[in-house]
Image 1 (cartoon, rainbow, N blue to C red):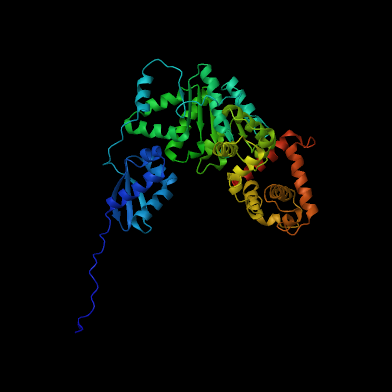
Image 2: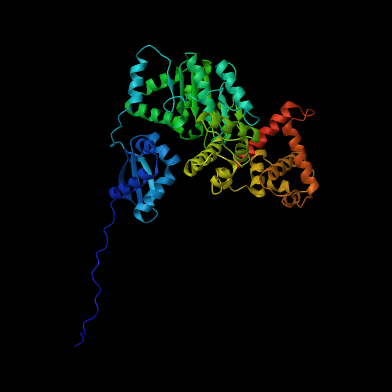
Length: 472
């Protein structure tokens, strides 16, 4: 007999909403798995969820410098971790929470407090030590980096007198760190008080010094350095650290103590860097390391083979050097790929083996999408101050014409388009006009004697600025 009772769905208990503490704990688990251990330990390990207020998660930290760093450098990662933990997007606020205990100072700060009370001794600090193979002699010099190498050599030979500060910039993997370590090696050999470290290590020491009440010792150590070398200075984006850096930069410079800085971008492209620091970073020498040319790439590959005891013929090295590559790191990766295939196959390194090894290997340059002509024009507008409409107008204006020529030159260099195709973006100008603009800039870059060295330097500076804006 059929039952007339209505069908009843089994009772399902709704999941309990996460408390703000549980939510932040889950987000921290995500961050611990995605961030470098040193980054997590420095910036996240001593945070806590304060409350959930009006749908906003309030996170507490123990000092203003940590708050600035989390907001300026890590907010996207925090937002993603909280979203994944909660299953929805939640707004986050970071506050300084006086109830949080200060973190104990790391060994480096404790050791420094002891050192400042003792006799001053030469010190070399780095990653955590200078790389022994990063010397001036081992740096492969070519047209793309010869100015940077010459400036580094001059600074190493006469610290505080040649270029102060020396500011080296380039895309990642082109040799900035190599030159910093090379200069530091010479300084240490001369018994100079030398500090060489990446910016994040400098920031961590500063935060720890503030928390432990050892700020005076921190300032004394850096202000007494005969030579200060800081890598990745593009990370100098928080106001507290900018103020601190400004102070000991001035003290070092007034004492003629050498400062060397390295960055992915020139000073004026560092986000939020105040004008007073931009001006100081530009006081001495700004030098860029460009992408290595074929002959330089070939010399780098030969040096790497020698260092690794790897036997590869000229045909193999030419094959690797001909691949599009914007960095030394790309070259090393392709060489390692070939060596790995040689070991797997148990066969000597040859051109056919290298082709098989690199068949599915993509370097950074391979994966990079080239800029569009529109992007090049926008970047040229920003660098020159010429409005976008001037790139398509038929009106004759010397300043606008020069900006158009720069954009045409870069479009030809980086897009792979024909002169005719490029001309269509500049008010349908014909291919001879684009060719003329390209050749005009090319002559300036190569050093037109009629225009002088200063004009060449200005053209190279503009091209470098535009390429930097395009991340080329």
